[in-house]
Length: 233
Length: 344
Image 1 (tube, rainbow over the protein chains, first blue to last red):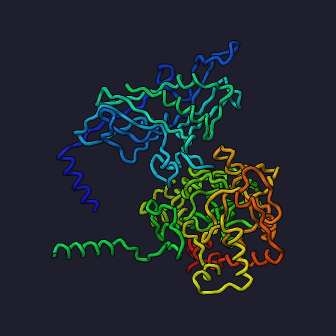
Image 2: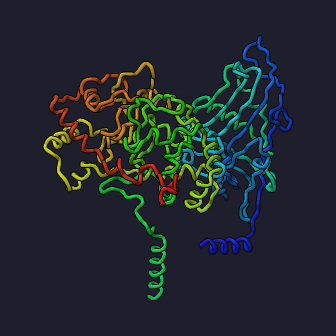
Image 3: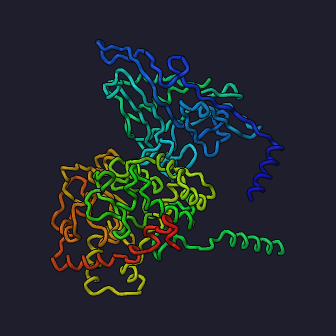
């Protein structure tokens, strides 16, 4: 049976050929390539006039899921990646390179994907690969993936060791944190997704918000904020 | 015509080839509803069930190798923990809820007293990771399993690949838990007309149907839903039940309706194990219901039972005991797996 598939695949391959679109995720802080474990200085938004607004921040880890990649033409889907789940890990450069493979004659002018994992996969049975719970991106005390995880230290955090951890997830109804993103693709040869974390921090009041570890309104708001970081170059 | 014949031969050959040689790893008992678990994503096999059973009994799953799933889910207690009102983990740590009895899990749509977990495969992550239970993590469990020659072999036999992953580990655990079907109590045999209730049990059955069956629906003896059954809040726990997960006030004090099967073996009762005896449970429903905003509609009207009727109801509830389930050698500690030499 496997051979038959392989045979069909080869026929298709020779007849139509394959094309690909490399999608690169590029992480920045204030326009500089993001480095983990490095102290950055930035101006936070003042909550009060009197507040000190110069903060130092250090990121220990940044991991998030991109899923459901689609190519579109005039807004209509022309190709969908199968089993499309990618865990992006700032610590692992290979994870920031996604390669989409599709038939050569695919005509497209747009790219669609989700930040996070859809609710059916969230509530379904266990899966392998990037979705394997050993990746540490699954909540154990309740069902659901952590869609976006940012951990580090900020001098503004009145917590032990100035730590903050933002674990954004939640899949059901009003708690759903998955964000859909779509972009026009000017260059059909390569897509570079840029995220600048300094923009993310601008909307966070670290003094009062430093631990988000369950689904809810905060997680939804921060997920929308995280989704707004994505720019396509 | 000839082509049709060929087609027929081909189809029958294919059907034969795909038939499980030792079939019926899982049977739906007569007149039971369809299971909710999606078996197509985790095809049962004898080797995987065997592997899951070994994992279930192995304290390797806990941080200090002292606690296995079976520590709180012992077969002889219908896979729960007697003598403990609340769960009991590593270093004698005590949890906040009573460990539930495990059976007929393929028919459940969610897990935990508050329904926090939506899929059986993911359920095991909770006790493995909880600091008051096994205090470990699936990452650690998988890396330890990968270091064990015994498990590499067992995973190879089950999956044709000795590389152990979280997915394979959790699926094997699900397979063993899915095999825990209890459907051979006296009640079941009476329903199949193989046996008869005594007069007392029959009276109890009719009381049960009038007063309890709306939530503890036959044949699973649960409606798989959540309800506030009028228990006063224990101020030392302040457990708000499902509301903790859904964050909706309408879910305050709602807990999973548990099955009543094998009650005799699975004391103490309720989410916090507050009742040691069945008679206390019955008394609660007759005279202990506390009215509050979210009290189950089924309990708004008082349940009135005379002391004789209480005894009759109890007699019926004891017909839900399934000895063949509790003492099934296929569910017990897998001595052969851990000490293969014992066979010689």
